[in-house]
Amino acid sequence: MSLKIAVLVSGRGSNLQAIIDAIESGKINGVIEVIISNKKDAYALERAKRHNIEGVFIDPSSCKSKDDYDRAIIKILEEKDIGLVCLAGFMRILTPYFVNKYKRRIINIHPSLLPAFPGLEVQKKALDYGVKFTGATVHFVDEGVDSGPIIIQSVVPIMDTDTPEILSERILKEEHRIYPEAIKLFAEGRIVVKGRRVFTPFPSI
Image (cartoon, rainbow, N blue to C red; front, side, top):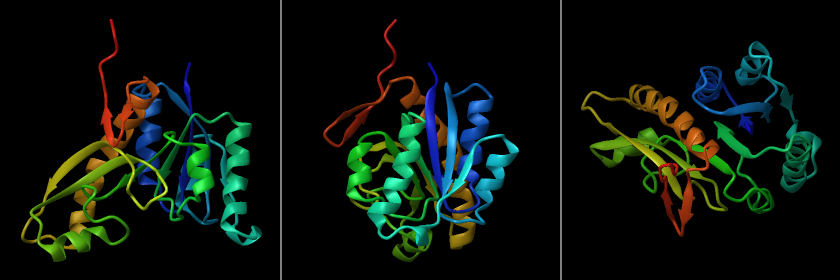
């Protein structure tokens, strides 16, 4: 049975495209049932059209509170019986109600080796701090900011000539590789969380 996936977006959706490509190539046994954006002009919604996936814009100004906004999203997720929610550049912090409603069923991609450099402008933070390596992290979403259990990480070396923009593009290539891999593991039921540690056992023969 295919995993029913929803992807929440705010921007161009390059990680969304990586997920779509992995599904269409047969790498992931899943289907994206809906793509939801909080930005009307997000290019990710155009990607949805190109692949005949339902795209929905929910205007934050139409909701009285963050809770109401999240409940509007949840209503759609419940109607479509979504099994996994993927954040792909979704520029809103989910409410505790949303996180607990879909506990261990929301994942996110972040352009650093968490727990280092959570939040925004992380490539600049890494360069300013002087670390020699950074990378990308796929993690479960909890009530904190980029603080949930880590599923997959990929290491990216920092070069002396890097700028935040150059480093961002190099990290993005790894994001596109590991995000579909994490979704694949979830779809195969191969993710086990014990405390903060995530294990990915091989399927039994």
